[in-house]
Image 1 (cartoon, chains in turn orange, red):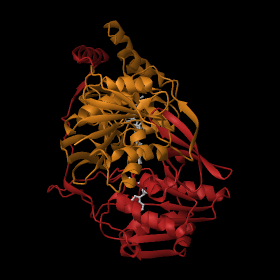
Image 2: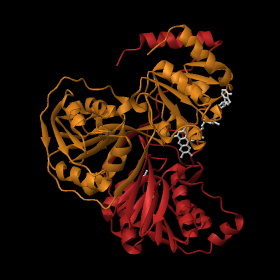
Image 3: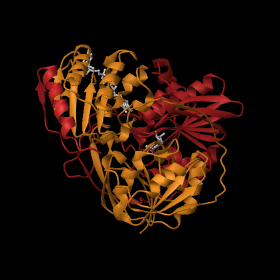
Image 4: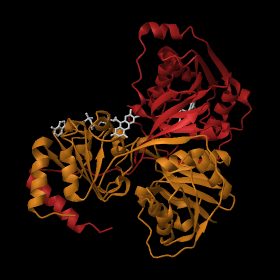
Length: 309
Length: 252
Ligand SMILES: Cc1cc2nc3c(=O)[nH]c(=O)nc-3n(C[C@H](O)[C@H](O)[C@H](O)COP(=O)(O)OP(=O)(O)OC[C@H]3O[C@@H](n4cnc5c(N)ncnc54)[C@H](O)[C@@H]3O)c2cc1C
Ligand SMILES: Nc1ncnc2c1ncn2[C@@H]1O[C@H](COP(=O)(O)O)[C@@H](O)[C@H]1O
């Protein structure tokens, strides 16, 4: 049973999600990693360094789903599993690949019970579905945040493939959110802010606290819609799924679509004026009060305690 | 340009669902149902394109039980011109849904197919991409902006690193994200008018698609419950807890 893992690449580097997906699927068979894109030398080298990788295959990509799917489909015949993380790229490509192969995919997997049995959340995480997949090829996406990263220290061979690709789709612009904070989907600590912050300037209270803690920054849909935070900070059913050791939720009510994104958090701390807010009720630790009073004091107090990460 | 919009009837997104104790599924009897929120954004996008002079006809299609007529009527009230219900009481997999929609695309030959990015019941996020594969059309998923430029589209997508804009020729498949627009609430006269718009109902068997499920759902279970926590009284106490958590956290 062999596995083709499609790597996630961000600005030429291997995204942290891929090492986690690798560890999730390590038990399924020897893993070949497909690195698809342009200027991917660094990503290919990082993939080759991951323990559990048999081979790294490098192909030029065109950033369009149809062209990528062509490559993956062309390679898939030698594999029993075709896998990617459930990030925005995997979500875009894998259902397309599955339909081309006439396969029903299993996506957003949070637990692998057996090579053909998987657990995935439905209804914004309010129910878990255990699925058996007896198809000859399994097309899967895996939630990276649910798994630990694979170790490094391997030297898998890197093989370059020469495949002709075409797409009628052109990438004409990208808008990246400049950020020096850790990757949200795999961060160990996340500080999240809600619409209660009131403005983009005020949202800096969240950003400052996050910086102090070496944390990634999250936001609710309401905060993103209001323009207080960029869309890639959104956490929840439609945003990113996080599973940090610690999540600090500031001025967030805890709508079920937001909770869908934080179920994997080990510990939740809530700061809210409303003791009845759903997130306060489910938090491990809550402080009731005005965030505009609490957050600056908290940041200062952590400073006084010498917290630094 | 002719636009086809696929819409799904799902448990209303405000309902707190209950998992049946026997593990057979989620309780849907007596539960409020409505149009999947992402599909509403897709319908709104189609109506806005039409209002801007880009849409000659908007056809909406839903696959589901007789009661899915409701969501088609909602879309007709929002401004779609014609409806099609592909009637089935079976819960179909996304691959089967995509194959049925591909047949509809064959029949209707739309220039643009709009779908929601995901249905909030199964949270699959498959059908648009699968339909694009089956009809061999380019796709732009998770759209937050759609512009008609020349003979094609420029679509801005929400992705993990921010946003990107793709240029794609028609015919194409686009799936809607929530920031694409604000769906309108149809006023009563529109709701009344919707009832006189054409709405065809055809049995699923008409389409000659193999609908047999590929996967076996073994059980549906509730997620693990979180234990109730405690409330602290002061910022100092909270800071102490955070500091000690950080110091015991395993370095990654
Ligand atoms: C299909 C669909 C998908 C969705 N997907 C997502 C998603 O992915 N992610 C997401 O987050 N949401 C999502 N939503 C939206 C979600 O339903 C909620 O509307 C949203 O999460 C609410 O954000 P909020 O907590 O910031 O705002 P609110 O619900 O308005 O809560 C604000 C909170 O701040 C508290 N507060 C106010 N002032 C202060 C103060 N001074 N100090 C401290 N606390 C204060 C209030 O008590 C309240 O609890 C989705 C909705 C739909 C329909
Ligand atoms: N039964 C259905 N009838 C019509 N459209 C559907 C159906 N199921 C899914 N879709 C479309 O596909 C989108 C994505 O759904 P899914 O892939 O199931 O998450 C939905 O937002 C709809 O636009």
